Length: 274
Image (cartoon, rainbow, N blue to C red):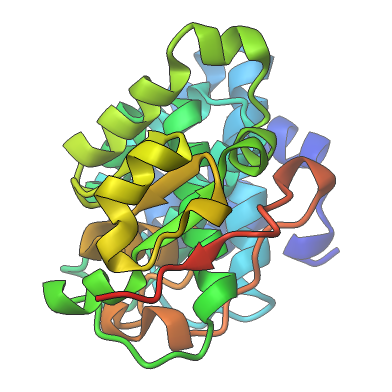
């Protein structure tokens, strides 16, 4: 049986004997030797969470990732933080970082930056990051850009209608009343995942704020935001494309996670003004 044919239940069972698990050997390389006795004390639920991340990474790596390994420092972040997450999109993100971290370069531990970052983000903030960047990717795919240049990010200021944003986030009226949106914007700005240029307001407020950059009153109540270098970089790593230059963010071929629960806004747009 090939590693890709191993079931999730089989991975969970085999994790207690990590050295003999072919899918772990595929995803982690020699670093699989670091995973051992500590897993025997884990609950079935925690093992299952970790197994889903490994399975996700295996899918992103494909059938033959070649010779390589994952930095033990990256693995530590997956074990410490990833094994406690149950949100499907968060699993995608940790799995993508794990897949992106598989390398023949022994000194490459960049993925540890992103496991630590994901460990600081709530599931709401991870979801908002995905909604923002996946929507931008769909709207501007193939457009030459260099997100390593701050001036380039200014060209991609964007607008999302508020109801479509709430729907893509899966937010209930109660969650909105609890201030979840302030939480998610504040966290993304704090971590540098979006620019500090953002606003969620009715049309009359947005017109004064974003009117010079192409917003019009007809667009209505919504969210305006600006991407960042780190936000684009995290998006690439989360989708298993961490080895691609972030300067080519919009030109990289990416497979977005599918599912009705991950639907994206349909009427979002890039603001035309500079």
